[in-house]
Image (cartoon, rainbow, N blue to C red):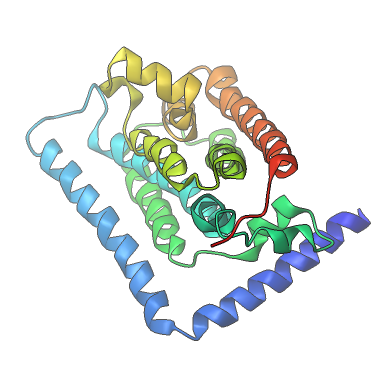
Amino acid sequence: MKNIKRMLRIHRIFMAQEFKRMMEYKGDFIVGIIGFFLVQLSNLMFLWIIFGQIPDLAGWSVNEVVFIYGMSLIPKGIDHFFFDNLWSVGYFIVRKGDFDKYLTRPVNTYFHVLVEKIQIDALGELIMGIALVCVSAPGIRADWDAFRVLAFIAVIPFVTLIFTGVKTITASVAFWAKRSGNVIYMFYMFSDFAKYPTTVYNRLVQNVITYIIPFALTSYFPALFILKGENPLFNLGMPVLASAVLMGAGIMVWHKGIRAYESAGS
């Protein structure tokens, strides 16, 4: 318990310092959030164009698709806000030899990397996701009982860790290869498939995004239970299991990578 309190205190200190740094450049802060809003709005316009020509998408109404889209943005936005420093590990921290500083400090290296920075522009993604869920939900014929609402809230931390686990595993490749930013990008871009119902894709893509790079578990499968009440054991249980497996594997690969790490520099 004492160690947890210490880590939380360190996290608060890092966040406070990061906010101070960001507030020195208020223009970048505002432009970053607006930029994310504009990207998501352009994607939504694409959806409205599609539904202007067809009544549904593989049996899903426009409100249901928008709900899934919004649900995919919430965990992605949380991961982006808190844990985006893993991209830096993949792109330049290891390659430049800057990882040495984490090894010389009396803090767990993985925890230190995670809490060192936050991405404030992720608020655009997060706010948009919450807004889409709230706007689309009233137009969906679903039994909005307390259990489904609580299930929606409870599953968010777990599906967020699916994003973080994938980034941890791919970022750790840098300990051997010196640079893994492109690997992170290649795997992370599969998360775009989570914005739409999995049934619109062919069987190969469905299997990949469900069992190999399981981003479908971050939105589509929880939505199956929340919207339609289908198979709660799989649709809620699998995201929890996947998050545990990916985070466990990610931390294991991270520590193996540290043992293989050799300081590098330009």
